[in-house]
Image (cartoon, rainbow, N blue to C red; front, side, top):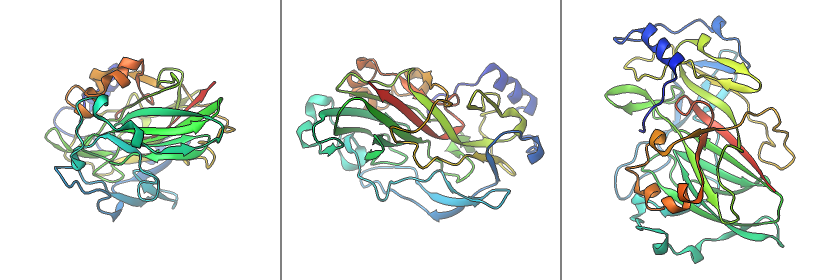
Length: 322
């Protein structure tokens, strides 16, 4: 997918593994964190959520895997793609919807989701790698119309009174369920990467003031590379190189709080987001982003994610609009 950043520590781990192959997965006893461990691939329940009528798309499967303590997890994550309201596309190749700029988009046709009857109508422009669900004050406004690829962009409208809370679930989809990877760059198991950017007509943009918490990390070969500090679930020291063998590879999962999207949810322990450049996410060849760059970085928005845009596959984002 896009360019991958590897921290200096991660590079040292990569070198220690050797360039010719993958070191054996570590023992579960090496993990000292608060998550639940799964090992190996999941059972596929839905082979593909999305069919592209006008081009190529990666398969978007869903499945389940049982962790080492007997709990069942949905991978890549629980989501509302099949049941939630679809956000209207700005750009979507499978529909043949390929405007060159915002002037060619019928913004008047975008439905307004009412959160507060006396509120202000706000328009949002969204680009996600790969999938998002947008909530306002706990109410689901829209879900990404394309779970994986080809890359699309979205427009939403909602009516709300300030102050209000934006909450977003973002998922970096995976072809290899519970393994956090896809066939790419000459390897069968290459970790994908994420990225989320949005701007809103009231001046709200994604920036360093948002918060992000990780709820699913994979693939992890050496559990000792994981750490937790001040509420952050860190995988910066883990290797991110693609492989052709993922025998015994781990995933790490955390329960998502039921009220995470509401205004009253206590996110005081969540870390701030990490910012990523357009070059790091790799959007220069994606017209679904570049054709509307004025609504994204041109509006002051920045790409955000957790501290690991490669390995963290389910991330929740929050921001209080005052």
